[in-house]
Image 1: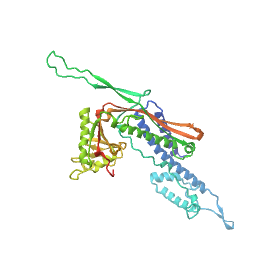
Image 2: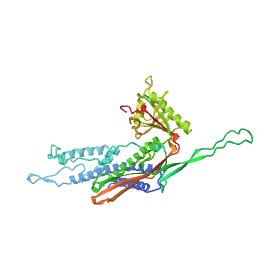
Image 3: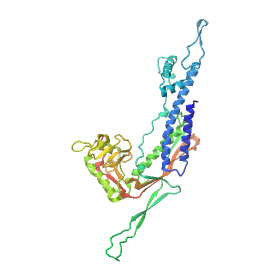
Image 4: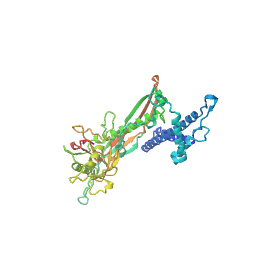
Amino acid sequence: MSIQHEKLIEARAALAAEADGILNNTDALASDLDRVETITTELADLDARISKVEAVEARSAEIAEARAAAPAKAFGGATVKRETLTYDERSGNSFVRDMINATLRNDQTSWGRLHRHMGEVAVETRTTPSTTDGNGGEFVPPIWLTNEYAEYARAARVTADLLTTQALPAGTDSINIPKISLGTQTGAQSSQNSAATSRDMTTSTVTAAVKTYAGYENVSVQLVEQSPLAGGLDRMVLGDLMADYALQINTDVVNGAGSSGTMLGLLNVSSINSVTYTSASPTGVGIMPSFAQAISQVVKNRYRAPEAFVVHPSTWYWLQAAVDGSNRPLVVPTGAGPFNAQGVTSSPAAPAGLAGTILGVPVYVDATVPTTLGAGTNQAAILCAKFSDSYLFESGVKTSVFPDVLSANLTVRFRVHGYAAIAHRFPTAISAITGTGLVVQSGY
C-alpha cells in the first residue's frame, strides 16, 4: 500500500468517526446535521480517490506479474529471450509513480513511458481478432463503474431551510409556544384625572405536534458483502434513505396536511393571506399585481416585511420568458443592467434555492411546491412569507442496521428515522397566491 493510499484511508476514517459521533448524539443541533451533509460529500470524494489509487496499484501489480513469465524455448535448442518491458520488475520503472507524475505534474518522460507501455500491452494481449463471446470476447470483461453510480434524482430541500430551525428537545411529543392573541391598549387621556385606556391581554397557545419520519430497505447479505462499491453498499442505501428523508420533510413544510402523521405545511395553515390570480390566458404582466398584493398582505397584517417568495421551477422560468406590451422581458439577468425591471434573475439556471428577485423580494425555486392545486389540479401555488416566523424543530436523523430481523433469509435491514415538529406563530406572515392563472404552462 502506497503512502498516498494510507493517508487517504486515514482521512476517511477520521471523517466517518466524526459523522458517527454527530449522528449518535441525541442533542445534535441543526447545524450539526449540516456538518454531516458536508462530511457525506467529502467522504464520497475520498472514496472516489481511494478507488482510483487502488485501481492503479492493482493494475501495476498485475502487469508486474505478467512480465515475470519464463523465457520460451525455440527450435534448435536456442533460447528466445524478450526485451525488458517498460514496467518489468527488473526495469526500475514504477507504473504508479509515472501515473502520479504524469497526471499531477505533467511530466513528459512519465507520459512517454506510459504511452510505450500501452503499445506493449496492445501487442502482448492481442490473441484473437474479435471481442465477440466465443471468439475471444471472454477475455475482454465488462467494467462497471460502481463508484460513479447515478443517484436517484430528488428535489432539494429549500423551503424548510428558510424557516427558523431548532433542535427538537428530547422527551416530548408536542411543543407549545405561548401567544398573545389580543394585546393591551393605550390611548389619549380625555382630561386630567379621568380614567386611562385599558384592555385586558388575552393569550393562547401555538402547538407543534412531534411527527415521526422513517423508512427502511431490506438488502441481501450477499449483496452487502460481495459488492465492490467503495465505502460499502450500506453507504449508498443509507445515503439514499437520508436524501428521501430530507425531501419528505421539505414537502410537508410546504404542503403537509397536518393529518395522517404529516406536519401542517405553510399552504394549509388556517387564516393565512389569500391572493387569487384568475385568468384563462395568464401573462407575466397579469400576474405581477398578485405578487404586489401578496407582499402587501404580509406587510399590513403582520406589520413586517416578507423575506422571500417560493415558486415552482415551472413558474419561475415561465416568468423569465414573459414580456410586456413592448416585448421587453419582465425578469432580466443582473448582467443586462436591469432598467425598470419587475424582476431580476441572479442565477439564470438555478435548479433550486435563490434564483433572483421579484419587486425587490428574493425568489427561491423549490420543486416540491405542488402543481396539483385548484379545480383542474394543475395549478402551482406561490408562497410569500416572513418564513422565520415559522419554527421547524428537528431531531438528528438516526441510522440503524439490523442483521437479525430477517436473519433466516440472510437479509439485512437498513433504517433511518427522525422526529420533526412545525409551529406557525403568525399565520398572517404567510401569503399564498393561487387561482386559474397559475396553471402550469405548456413546455415549462
